Image 1 (spheres, helix red, strand yellow):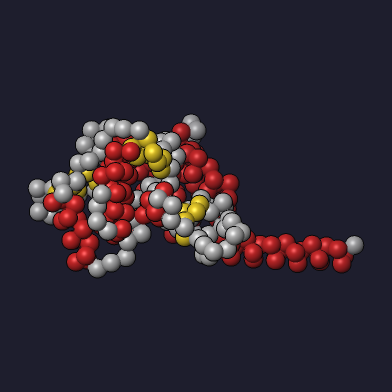
Image 2 (tube, helix red, strand yellow):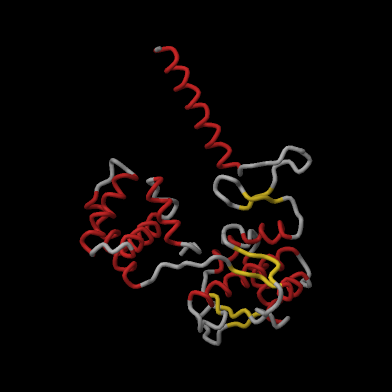
Length: 255
């Protein structure tokens, strides 16, 4: 499940933009929760979801999506919408992370800490356990390495006393043991590219896209012009600008 700190605001944006996003099942669940919170009855929520789906794709077959819609509504009734301003990282925690030897393991420790604090906020008595899948964690930490290397980093963190493994053999959850009070030095409000956010905090050439908000690497650090958009958004904006230009030219030729 993708981590969204303000699910209601996120759902509003998806409704306004008529977008199912990269994970339609998650979008439908959060949009269903949005309508529930707005006071709609279960049947009305179903109708709203069907309407939202057709706005996203005019060719969609509602019967084919019936099970997905039912599941989204059922899940939405089980869980409250998450509303968190940010996850705060303290100076004490950052010093512990910075003391680790290697950029990858520092990004992993930072990501695990962010996740542990997130889950401890959502589930107050979770005691900083992280139950995300390893591939999700590595993706958020922007780490692309072998399974052997991943295991070695986890083992190093355990030996340093920073994490604890579950006693259950088939349980891959880990508990973060270095969450500590202190002065807030970093606030996380977006869980995409946490590894890049750690590097950006330490002055490396990364920035937040002004369109989608994702933290990404600066294409040309030597270019004095400030980069505004990530590669994906820059491409989309350029295409839209060309379309707008063509439309304006056609409108002028008709006059």
